[in-house]
Structures are given as C-alpha cells and as structure tokens.
Length: 130
Image (cartoon, rainbow, N blue to C red; front, side, top):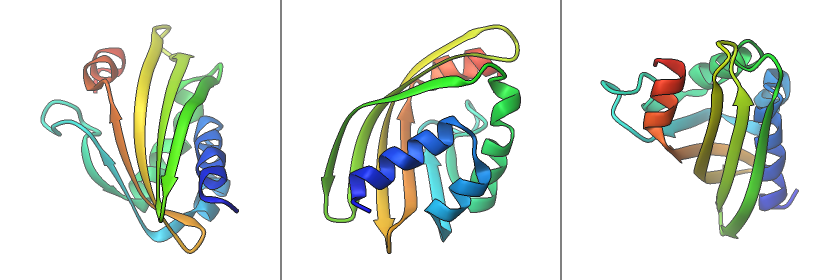
C-alpha cells in the first residue's frame, strides 16, 4: 500500500472509530503526540498505543451521529506523510465540533509508527471541557 493511501485509510478508520482495524494499521510501539500543554488540554502531549486505542474506543459515544473527517491535501516524502484534514460533528452534548488538523505521520514497515497532531486546542477544550 502506498504511503498516502495508508494514511487516507487510517484517517477514515479513525473517523469510524474502528479500533479493531486501527490496531492492524499501527506498530506495536506506536506513539501519538497532540499539540498543546497538558495542563491546559488533557489530551495534549505524548501518548502510547493503549491510550490511542482507548480514545477511539469511546469515539462512538463522543459523536453518536458519526463525524465527517475529510482530507484536503497530502504530501509524502520518504517515511513521512503530512495531511491536512477537517472534522465536523455534533457531540453527544449537542454542541458543534468543527476543527482543522495538520497531521505528520511516520511510517514503518507498512504501518503508522507515529502520529503528530496539530489542531485548534482552544476549540477542543471549550467543546469537550477537557
């Protein structure tokens, strides 16, 4: 699978909160870094595979009507893929979530080894109270 195709598949799998499939797309030592300061945004900072899978296991509860998660552009070089995306969804609390993302993925052996996530942390915090 081509690197950009793998990343597009991974983002779609995150949108669906398909933990079983996500598990097949990431390495055993997968890491997830989210922009921001942990004292401001609970999810900011460095996370391991278990945290990541646990987060997406609750995705259906967070967005009961599903989410639109669309990729607007990608570039790839070597083992890195950068992707711009936007997510729009109604939360379980009834508020509207609309955030733009920039991801930097590091791939290894046909899987995602690392995901760095940049987004509007203020919007995430005020929407979810994290």
